[in-house]
Every structure is written in C-alpha cells, then in structure tokens.
Image (cartoon, rainbow, N blue to C red; front, side, top):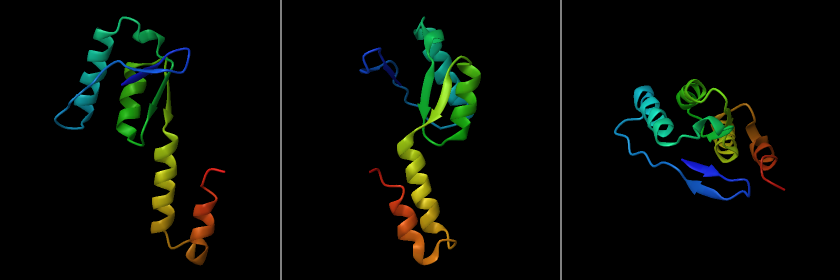
Length: 102
C-alpha cells in the first residue's frame, strides 16, 4: 500500500506477500494495516484495480474511505472488452481511439 501526503508524494505504508488472493487473506492484510497504523481512520480514498472482492473488503474494513477504481485498469478493461466484442465490427478502432488520452 502507498499513502499520499498533502503534497502529493507517495510513501509505502505496507507490503503484503500473500499466498492466495482470497477474501480471508485480503481481510487479514487490512486488519494488519489497521493494527500497524494508528492513523488508519484518516484514510479517505483507496484506489484499487477491478477486483470487486477487494472493494467489498476495503469498504467493510475502512468504512470512512471512498473506494475508487484505477483509471489505467478501467481503460485497459474497456479496450479488452471492445476488442473481444463483435458489436462494434469495423468501427472497433474508432471506438478504441476515443478512449485514448488527448
């Protein structure tokens, strides 16, 4: 986990090496984070990839925090979904190009 200070600088606050990515393991990581960081109640925003299990657990363990999806992972998922879909046909490239940053 990385925390950002008031100046926009990121600082590592926890490393977790887990055997399996399960709800139980994620919950234990969050419990450890809370035990090791007395100011955990000040966490206001958590950015995650698209794993919905993580989102549910973070919402339960950090109820004051707002959980946001990572912009990079959302765009990546959209690209993959559009490329796999037959819905867009010959317009696939046009649709994908609208997702590129300007």
